Length: 507
Image 1: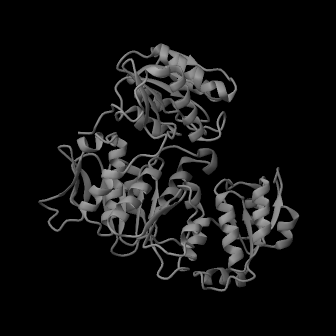
Image 2: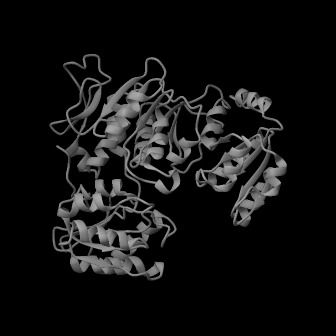
């Protein structure tokens, strides 16, 4: 095992000798295939182990020359993996730490890496390695990743978003043109199995209960998120309103000289980004930060483009801090904000009819995200429910009860939701969609919401839950909601792009 440990320790470059390395790859989604494809290219002996794969995936594995074991149960290490006697396992994010194959690996002393760990070691394939920006948080990761990449490009840098955003980081490091900066969205799953990364800048946007079924406890989930700051070289960006991210930065082992840069919706401190009288300001990267701040944009200008919700403004401040750590001019950040648009299913206005606004925030897959979404509106008919992932929903219901005209419960975890409303919002009218086929869920929810809403209300799909109980994913859930709204309203709705949602703007 010492020889194996020494060899793995030496594998820190694309140009290291990876030939003949015995590697088990767990999972065959985008991530798993990118891992297998990369390692075969490097000359490693690769065996992919997966519970499922379609015919095209099987053919691709055959084409690249990796082995493949499909086991729908996978309740133990398959014989072919045992026979391979892997020197390292590279695991896809879907595998829980207590999965039988990972427990087998732990008992054998086999190291377990994620795709991000592998990519960091291989980042020098194309000339000078790109600098990395590492972005995590319970919510806002994808928006902040896209914002940061857009700002960097506006500043003249060749930058790309990758990682948990849907583009495997291994694909990005193998791009033949190369990049100046990779903006890497990182889930807690990916951070759990990442050890060597040393980013130029990093941020944990926020931390709230999520994925407890995967990590086992909130403490383990928080510890995984905190790894984003380890060995940061230049800027540790943190949320001034989140005590946990403050503690993460205070406790992080960073490279000497790395700065802590705060962001928040209040007046910025000496090394912060914040908001003063409706103006977004940089008080961190300016020569005279004791007496001056640089104006980025205004909340009103952002609101006019549908970017004025408080949590979106916070994400913009975080992204600006990350971009400014590379010296991107304020003018370039403004230019990026002038063209930036939120992804689908993020506070997306679907329609306005009879004084009622219909908003799709299907991406609000946990209580923290739903809380931010509810906070953007005055009076809400809330469509909520799905897979709660072991999270206590009571604090959210209690915190936002005063905003609710009514609630429509969907999904398999309706009982804990129902009890939460009974305890904390007994005066809020409650409606439930039973368990119809997927095709009927949103149509029923929309009809119930329409019956409860009055002019001035927002009907908000912000489920605070995962979607896989009744839908393919959050995009499928959001698309079905939008389609059900349009079908219900017929020709009486304003175009979905007529105006931004009428949410609060931070002061």
